[in-house]
Image (cartoon, rainbow, N blue to C red; front, side, top):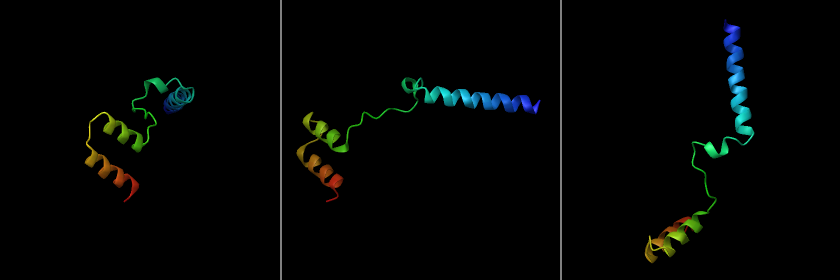
Length: 67
């Protein structure tokens, strides 16, 4: 009985690994995907859309630059 359970567990792990490696899980991921934007691109986009003002933009920019 223990041997059957072990074979079943190994089989499930193998199928899950195959599923992730084959790329079929990429669209169904439970983790949000990063769109690849850098912090500066996000900051510039927020400033351009009016979400933050110039003073806040400069403060965040200086923090990102380590000033």
